Length: 251
Image 1 (cartoon, rainbow, N blue to C red):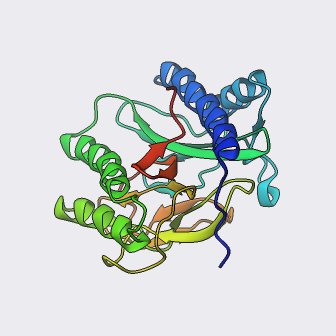
Image 2: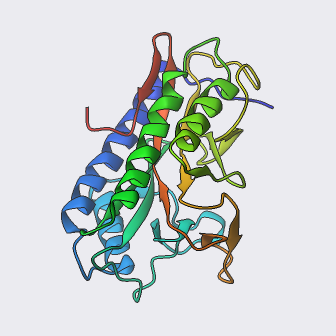
């Protein structure tokens, strides 16, 4: 397994890509209102990425025809932004976006919602985000992938949720998906050791019920097997000598 170590210049390009992505999310958040369709959101995302002289990473990836993945309620990831997929009060939506800029990709996801949502759904979204941060607390040179995965899994399961096991976090850089695949569950001390300059897209996918998932007939959309809700949170990070730096942020 060849894991790419990025130079400071390459990390700077990834950071620029990530800053564009973060700005796109700011625009999406303002427009995520009752009645909006997934297609309208995807069109907005496409326009914003192009306006920043960047390219949507997902568009054309393995034949994918859209600029984002938009997953609603029981859809875990890879939801297609159909025009009849509308978000109404009580719905949650995972929006996953990739940006290609200066030869490098960034990848991030956020789960949005339209009030009112039940307290247990608020908790699901909160714990999913917290699980990401628990993982990157362990993203220190000399630690292992297993250390990150164990921290993520433990936090989610301690709060009564399950971690999707059929899908992984991943390396990222010149390619949208690079080695290594990073399970979101695992054992302390197991897996490759982390080194300064490694870049990953860490993305907990957390379910209210079973961790088992199914793929729909469109061959993209992945749903929970019990059709209970799922949340998703992701950022692109770089391993530095002092720990993880989030690249998909404005600052």
